[in-house]
Each structure stands twice: as structure tokens, then as C-alpha cells.
Image 1: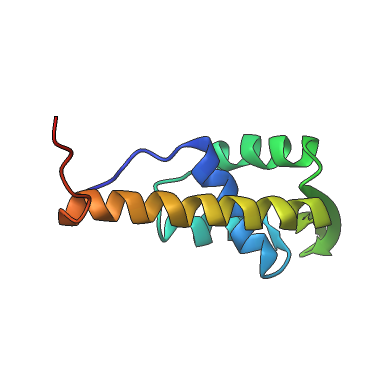
Image 2: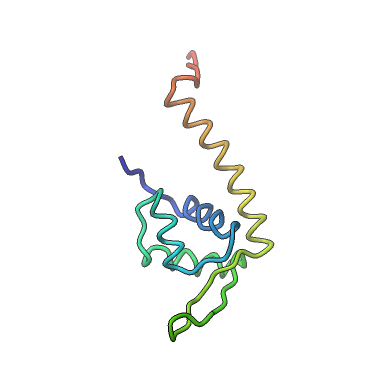
Length: 108
């Protein structure tokens, strides 16, 4: 069952992939599609926003007679990734507790 993906979740996913190495848009899309329903037209605004926030840089390299744009995570992007990953862990634990019934019941 697919769940809606927020922009915050897309941010951490993009930053996670790029924390492991530079990638171009299509490769990023394919990597993210393994977990979320995503198109390139959805990804590119996220990439532009992350660039505007100085979390990503880009550069071009020739490939098959044309240039391919690669994205690279910056130092501030790595810090943001760590922060978002910690937020995700806390959120995931909270949701898991609700789903498994471990959250407890408040008396009221």
C-alpha cells in the first residue's frame, strides 16, 4: 500500500542517496523509486530547492555527446541529512509503537 511522501521525506531520501556519492537526476529517480512513487518531474523541483538552500551543488560531465548534470551534497547538506535522519528515526519509532500497540494507552 503506497503512503503519501512529504517534501521532508523526499529531502532526507535525496540527501541520503547523495551522501553515498554524486548522482545525476535519472539515477536518483531510479534509486528513490525503489521505495517511493516518484517521477523525474517531481524530483527536479526538490533538487532545485535543496540547491537554493545550499545543501546541494551541481556540475556537468560529458556523456554520449551531451552533458549530464550531477548533484553533489555540500557540507551543510550533510549536516542537514544527519539532522533529518535523526528526526526520521524518532518518527519511525513513534509510528512503529502505534502500529504494534507498544505505545501504551493514556488513561483519561
